[in-house]
Figure 1 (cartoon, rainbow, N blue to C red):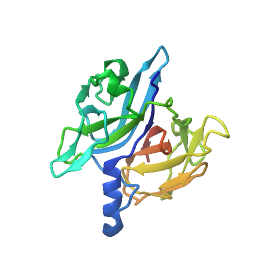
Figure 2: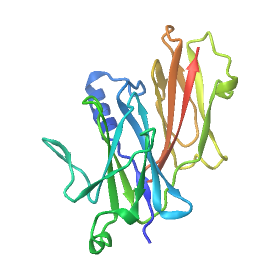
Figure 3: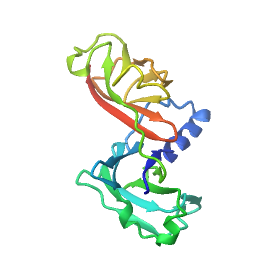
Figure 4: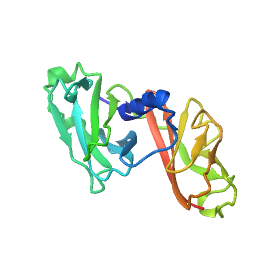
Length: 236
């Protein structure tokens, strides 16, 4: 029986971070047209079916294309060396369904597959695609990130601030849930320091003093396995 786990090697993020090494790029500042993360969850009633979801910033329309081998970078972009098939997005287009029973690959080759690779792309040239590598040998393992605190309180109870710094802390389902996780923080304004932590910890959002509204994205991963995230709209 094939089961699914995932890694989310975001090609766009890698390219941006590489550029940042020489361009003084602030890695926590996210701009429109970005695919931040991908994840999969298994249908409890049908272990051959999975819901795929993307976390995006300013990307409304997505295309989901599955491949039986890793996507290869060429001068024409990313290409697949096996037959590909298009996944139908949901109404929001931030989700799609992967049905392993409908994979258009001959059965004799399915038995040789260890992973399926889903390319997620936007409808604009400025969007850098991301790839979700899905293992066929283990179930999804997504961290149990359940929320975030701003200055120690829940976002819906937070009264704003006149300060230039806000403490941001992930909230986990239990004391042990953060073990083995790597958590990244992104913001549409200001900067997070640190922008990435391992296991439990906090970070600080430093504002420039002119923001009135911003969005925070907190993404936790078991590297090579799964991802979970939370999104917070902040009014100052």
